[in-house]
Image 1 (cartoon, rainbow, N blue to C red):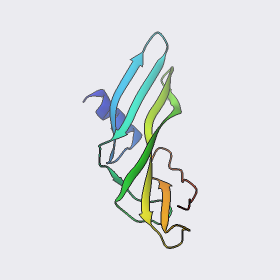
Image 2: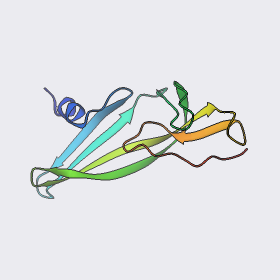
Image 3: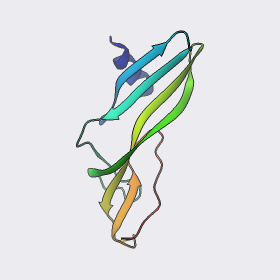
Image 4: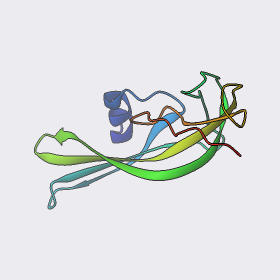
Length: 111
């Protein structure tokens, strides 16, 4: 089993999320895990629940994870903004983050 497969299982990631890389620095006592999704990945909107929303924009985020034995562990991922129609929003567009680690929602915006 490869290291990225092991981390994928240990983190409980499901498609479209996947571990794409890991770097282990013994001297710095640090583990960095890179999480991403394939181009064209689609996500459910956490605001309205609509499935299969296209990615609108991404921003790189880093989270401190529990230690990997005595080594600090960090998760790095692109956070996505999904767009889905929603009549409850001022612009009829619901903007919110996809199922990213951790899932957080953008505020509604009008166009």
